[in-house]
Image (cartoon, rainbow, N blue to C red; front, side):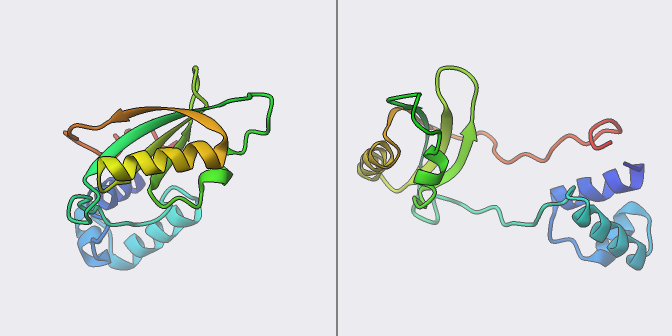
Length: 152
């Protein structure tokens, strides 16, 4: 990946709402060249989308937890992500190495909501759970470190 493309990715990672005019100025390109490069980065899958960073507290979802899940019977089909996809409280599902099979990031409104969700997870996916409640989040969703070797 060329240095200018890395600069574009870094600028958009820091502020995904940059106009093409502002982006072009930051990376030293014309507006049309910046637009063309962004489109190519999107087509190559380097830029996968754009989103908003939200305050979960403001959305009345102040309780964040990590829920490690493991099937009762490891010989059964590994379909927990599909069985849990309907639960909107699950923010992310990670397949992990180690004792557990998946690690779920969940966001709920209260301990009672977490207890209800854990029961739903256990029932829907036929798994055991181990839960870690987040006390505070010093940082989250940090932009990636983009170097000459990072993206090709």
